[in-house]
Amino acid sequence: MNDDAVTRTIIDRDKLPPLFPTYRHSPEFWEQLGRTVATYGFLEEVLGKAIFVFSATRKYSPDEIEVAYQAWLPQLERALTDQLWNLAESYGKAGA
Figure (cartoon, rainbow, N blue to C red):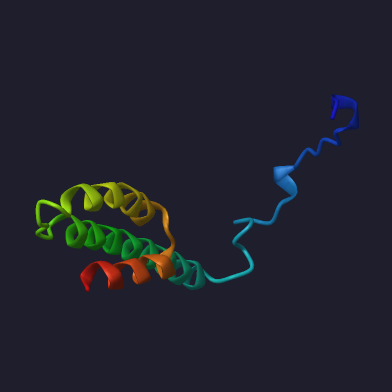
């Protein structure tokens, strides 16, 4: 798309309501929403660390080490990027 086809918008900040865009709800609402989002993020982080601990500190027989090592890196990558539901599933499998 060339620049001529792009419609540009200029926002007049002086015409926006005070505290835009959060002005329609109380500060208590936004505080609770923020705490909820932070709690989920904290839980995801803790589950990721727990998956690491359970998967990295198990004892392996010498013939299992190479297979376990090959599976470990993708498991840890998922533990860092997965959402809560998948992390809970992985945690259940890692702790078993």
